[in-house]
Image (cartoon, helix red, strand yellow):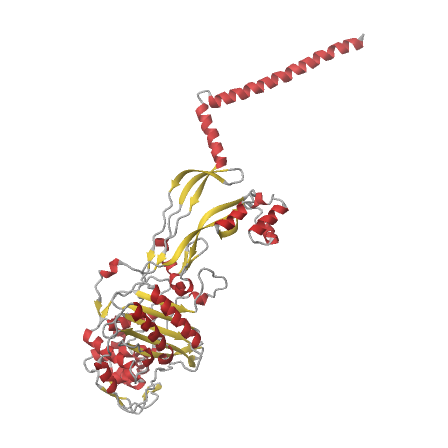
Length: 594
């Protein structure tokens, strides 16, 4: 009887449980329907819709940066010196990429031209990060081979890479950018704000693998950088670079540079350096090769400032070009030093002192001048202060000022020791002579504003012309710079051979060969300075090493600029013939070692 009653109770319990579960499921369904209605039908639906939309966008819509195009750098004729080209940089989310199979990672390494083991090490190194670069600055074809693998966690972004069509020819002047296309050296750094653009922003839709599937709205347009046009004429730059490189190699020199200045405008037309480097591939480049020596290096100008000392003498009114100077017996004792000429030149005039580069003659003149007169003239010509090109690291040089000058200091100063200049400063000083005493602003960049600036008169025009006539005799048969001559043109210039400073003072067997001058002397167009540092062959005089570079470059420059030749000035020939007969054309350019 009890068994029958138990069997009757079990179906009742089962029905109750079934009803309870069914009721709960109905309640859940009703709750879901109510929630959907609240989101889409009831008055609160609009807020719910916006919530869902925002959540969906947060998972699919991203704001990406639109890279800005960097402005190009061009020469004065529009030839490209630096230009940005579009490239692709591949990056990855290591946390997602590590989930790929070993086979997929091997394919990825092959497409990236990487060692699979190195790729695995990088993934391990960045395992807790969400970003790492795979490869930067790939061509679209290279990036496409990787993206075609369709690996989760691998993405691409558009960037720009700087390319330098002229390569090593103008590398130190133009400079270069870093991997993020920001100026790092040279004019790329100096004009970073001008060249760099303003990145934009754009909303895009991405799929589950992080790939862009749709472009939405542009939130901010990218603003490209502005182009920069330099004063450089690449025709002259190639010419100067070729001749400089040849001279440095032939003389086994450590380095060298040449700077060419337009005397009429103050524009720098060429600035070449050796050694150089390829800015498009800087792997293994030494820091010394990236230095723009014409602006950054300071050096003692040596005998190239002797004409400036002669100018200071002319300004006193007590000297004329033919004022006699007795250099006998070929040496002079100054407290602390004995200065000598290679031979006893005897009686010279002021012009002959410059022609022969007489150490004794220029010392006697310097000791006869008021102590600060020479320094004041050097300063007027632009020595001792930065030229103002804005180039990073531009040297201002050293122009000492003393209340009392020791005689040996006055002598050294007169023939280019005890002060330092950079190449462009020296070219500007010679440009003042070429412009009959007018000093013009010097620039590396073309600017219409500069044309409105009136040149400053710093030297009497007639005196500057007299010094120019002296400098023409230096290029004559009896001068130290005859190898700088250019057939059919009158050349004015001065050689210099400077002892280099070593660990124990001035070295006896290490030199810096210098030539500074301008052409044509009768109607100057170009001023130039050539410096060959530490030539290691038997010849080292400025007239033997630097002067031939000037002559070769200026001969080509006259043709390129279509400057018609002119006959040599009778006045310069007469000055050369007026020198005492029988004197050897060998000249002393070394200077004191004090």
